[in-house]
Length: 271
Image (tube, rainbow, N blue to C red):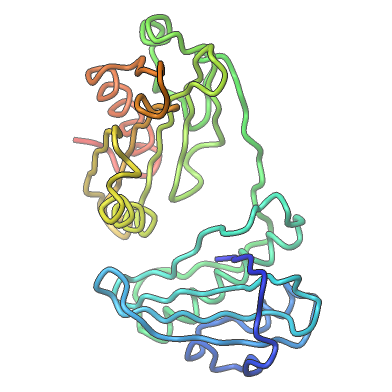
């Protein structure tokens, strides 16, 4: 993951080949920071019952602007966690590509260290930074494709959808937009480690998903469990006068349609 920090410890140890017991891709991290000398730190702790190694690297001096490249390795959970903690829009295309290479190479090293089975990722030549596309609901062709029928669009006043290309990531999102500014339904799909992480957070902080509708389904192979979520914004209880447009039946129907379409694209068809 990338994390933005206001402070860093420039007196920490220099990064070495055995950082994170050899899992942290030192050369890829150094390339992200333009070849600068790196500092590092790390520790081991438990997360959701899994022993996890946390370590990070950053450029010494002023080159890093407080940014760290951080790695979370959970061998028993069979994945290396990655998520964005700094606005990805602040990074150049070259930096985003280097982060992908850092994550891929670190995951490869961790997999070899723990004897994980299955194909390993290759050093990516490019990173897809396709922006969100907003289209009329009837013209959805990305992550919202196959979700909204003409009847649902008319009854719920869904005028447009906001989507990204589908089937490319372990997390997918589709937004169904109503006429009022900011009023929308958000549909999310999570697979593999993304699903595991999201289910843990929802279980630990149930207030954050109050009013949400969720489904989970078992997938074959390495994807494990798929997790799907429906939320309407602003939330009905968020402010006086705000109310839900989609009833329980609507919510379950839209979520099931989204889960079915997304699951089929990811090789996890719903029964």
